[in-house]
Length: 503
Ligand code: NAD
Image (cartoon, rainbow, N blue to C red; front, side, top):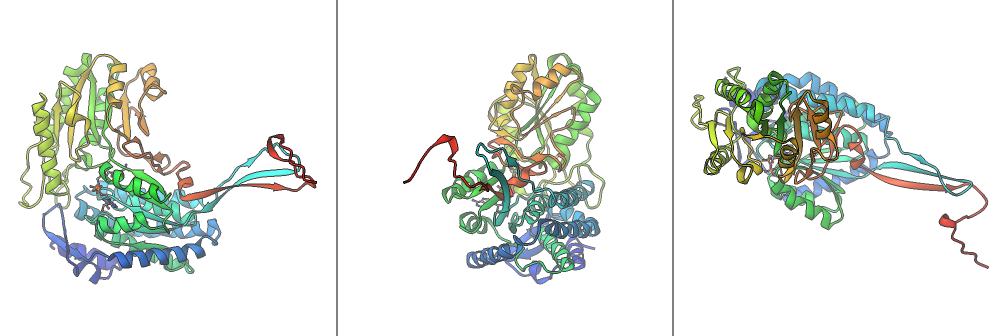
């Protein structure tokens, strides 16, 4: 069966109307084979606006549904995702090029966040706060905020939506989703799965979840719309630089999840086998197309000549090929631009004195697809292209002597998403996690930079945008906080001892 026929088969099984992926002027190309697998139509600006109005009306109904009941819808969504896991994972492999276990892993992450959000629906706690006035009570309440606009990137085309949607829905918000223009098929599939959960739920208002397929023009309507109080935007730092100020200009709230340039430090005491395995997955997994992919590694001078040759050998031996027909560990890059960006990065690194292992194009049997061997680049300097995110499997490796210096270099880039240290020395580990350590939103010890669990808040600092999604108390960004003071006394004492006696 051709990839095009297979995707149609899966989408039909999931209940997606064939007209939504066979008629339209935007052609969808599978990065695995380079062939056209579908075509979709972009939604117009007017229809986008109308959909937001409808989502706003749905919000007025949904906010009154008790939160644990809202949680029931998300629980059902989790059940439907479990049932559709194989199909959804396969779509991700076809549309994004992820290897089978990573495609399935992305759906598992969605199931996990549904479980988390279902429990959360009974835990949207506010505080009771001691008041300075007798006969008074002060408390905080968390209320639904409104329509949450979700703009997502191509590389986690389904999970990013679910991290936002599962939380937003239990918080009493409605969701308008603009997926990446490169991945409309998995979003159509997710919307169909959601519809099944909503049908089982029974009385969900129309407009709880709206899918808007289109390019950045559709995203811009969402970003500027007064009835969308929260924009959660995942993508490049370039995108965040445009979206952040526009949302701020109308006093909206943005949750920005942007680029990363993640580093690891390998210390003299490191368990080198463990570090090797973690770096191999962190840097080569998903063909280097994770926001948390490891892009820089600092190796202590005393173990460099032992560790780096082993890493290079791993790079030479990794299998690159179709995730659909082989068990290769590294699939294709998403498109020509990504492949060209990798080529340019390697050229720039060479000019700076880098020594490259790998990086060459691989003939995987598909002339229109873009397969490359992951590249490891030994760098004499930490500057230029090393300090930028290239969304491809390029790992820069540098020697260090002094840990303070390595941490300073690790932090000396624009992005601040993920980081790790490999050490068995407790002082080094604690220094890395301390106020003077990593400045990233994620700082790990003895595990890789990528593959975060949903239980923790996910996101990063600086040019990564500062947003947090997923676990911990990230839900608070999807609600509005009201501080309430109730006077049950017969007096009217003013705070701070102020007196204002009227005759
Ligand atoms: P991208 O910035 O090209 O596009 C992301 C999304 O933003 C797409 O839906 C796109 O249509 C939309 N968009 C772009 N410009 C816009 C604008 N001006 N207004 C409104 N919407 C706009 O990113 P990509 O290539 O799809 O994804 C790769 C990037 O995403 C990498 O930089 C990666 O690090 C980052 N990423 C970050 C996280 C995170 O959680 N921090 C997660 C995944 C990906």
